[in-house]
Length: 329
Image (cartoon, rainbow, N blue to C red; front, side, top):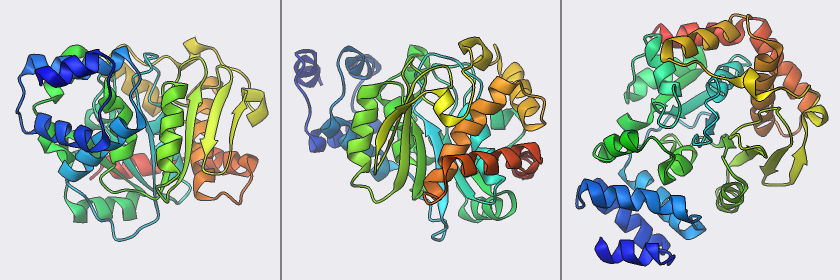
């Protein structure tokens, strides 16, 4: 590891194969905590390359517990996290809204690392029990329209690295990997990333994936469509910058997107939005993300149609029904 770290600190890069082998070695516990910490922080000092990110993704997919959901047409809405904004749980809420339209959602998530409350914290707070059991997950998809894949359960080989990530409490390249390593490999994805360079890398990798996807980044730093200013949107067919008005929404303030200071407070915001008690800013931000995800699934429909469809899901209580159905398992 000493030679590898010295090489990386001299701004040299890894090949795809070397990246894969190195991450597998980390998972096998071949390096001590100090070496792992040093390695994780390297990519705070320079941008990760396409080859490196691809190799790390290959390793996690090789090590994870894959789940076959019987060829269902599924979708994931997942951000990288690590944007430092500590918003309420926008992508998780949008996932239930998409499920409320009748689509099948396989949400990949984890505990909050650089934020107060991640998707796993929220669901666990409401009593949802994480599982890797295929039959249970399929029943959840059939009944609730959504199931949840808790990343640590599906990546047991990463168990030794998780405490180090928690102690660091900053984004690492594992944040970059999260959306890429959903164990169910859903064919449709909305992906939020925390900077433009990572958006370009994702777009390059996903162009050869065979998936339908949209990658989003708000230019003021959010890993989702924040409606706080200009937003970059990339798909396999196009890329463009839009402001909130272009999408039919009003601009919102960053303060309007604040999450709770605790899991309990975050859960209150989360449930309030599903119950129709959210502010206009909160609701519209969820609708913007859910609507774009819905358009990934249905590219023949206009964005306005998609926004109308997902708004109906939220306002009619369908999204809330999906949530209650899932946590009742």
